[in-house]
Image (tube, rainbow, N blue to C red; front, side):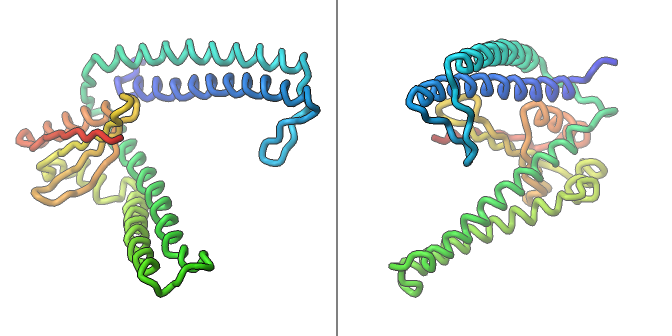
Length: 253
């Protein structure tokens, strides 16, 4: 059975992740071999999270270096091949198949994961900012600086709670209002506004937020990749040819 475009892209993405891990493992082995051998010359051992590694002598170091080189070059070669396949696919435009709309659920899963991560981060950071005046023995909990930290921390904490709430709404994806609207009432969605956040230093750091609009109201902000974005655009255009589509790029340091 021929795999569709979306499945192929996901497969390549997973393989790229696997080969990257392989390459990083090889580099780590090389570092452990070199540093461990140098430490062993002075009768020291490497300690990782409280666990002492065996003393690395010349033979062990040679074995680690050989394994590290194999892992590094194998991972590098396979990663380059996967990136070439990915580049070849990126030149093709994915074609929507109404018999396979799995990309919608995958997009919502990614959005849920992003909301939880951001919610936990902002919640923890906000709580920490509120606690700072009490943790610092020299701080005055009722002073102006402390009041500023309370306000700033409360704002960040509220943002974290909001993101967690949005994540909880997607716990049962197929019962969520966003999923039901996209799947059963897509003609209600009148706008698709794309915000691309691109690193100013590397092309690999790229985040795409898709704002689904019903009139002037935002239905949801989805985290999508380029393939999902194109499929989503085609899907919504099929149901609403007058869809208002726009895209903006924001470069960040």
